[in-house]
Length: 289
Picture 1 (spheres, rainbow, N blue to C red):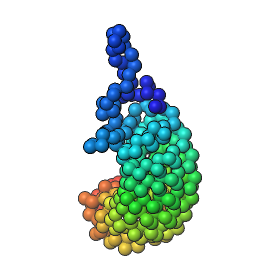
Picture 2 (cartoon, helix red, strand yellow; picture 1 turned 90 degrees about the horizontal axis):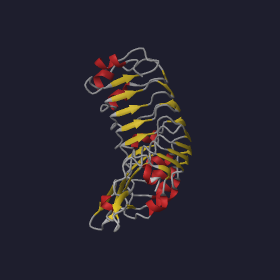
Picture 3 (cartoon, rainbow, N blue to C red; picture 1 turned 45 degrees about the horizontal axis):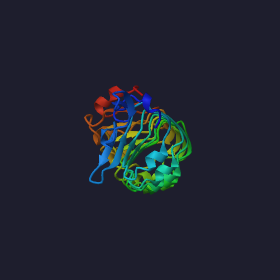
Picture 4 (cartoon, rainbow, N blue to C red; picture 1 turned 60 degrees about the vertical axis):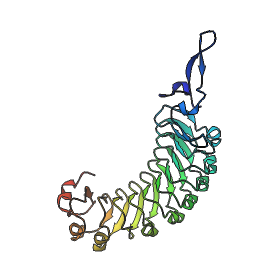
């Protein structure tokens, strides 16, 4: 699979064993538990995890072999040299909870079929060359806690309305794409959301109310406009980091910003076109982004 002899770590997959004539012959370890990156789910003794990140894997994602692992719950192939499409067949893996194909050279559209893998709690397809509209069917994944589709450069369109169904989501990153339109007003209903990164897109219009649960917010480098009211500060009391820079917001930061969030809570803040930084020590971070 994917050029095994070139893998950085291949214990048990490719090796040498003595034959009866005391010669060294290629072999695969009989026990999959001895294979590097393989986790066995007990008591069924079936492959449950495939952890092959940063291992110099090449070629396309071997979906036929992967989909044959019917108990596989974790597939981590990030930081390799994989190319080709994200296999739509992964959507048929009913046990899959963690899918990480980040930082490869994958291309094509994000398959809508991923929305059929209802057990998924984490999807990371960041750092590839994926394109096309974001599939609305992902919004059916009501157990999904983390969704990272950032740094693909080619995804277009707006954030689908169907994502309002991601009520378990705690971490959403769609940064560094070509997304347009308004920041969805339904985000305020995602009450579990803690981290939101929509930076480096082309979102426009006014900023809608956001979940009070947020601890990290990055909306920098968009086309957002309008005025941030004082209710933004009194509402967002859990924020630890906030980037609003390089937008088209009017006026200055609300005066009650420092009252809403103490300097200890705020790691950094920067806002394009704002002439004043509030939040005490956070003012020293002005200009870092």
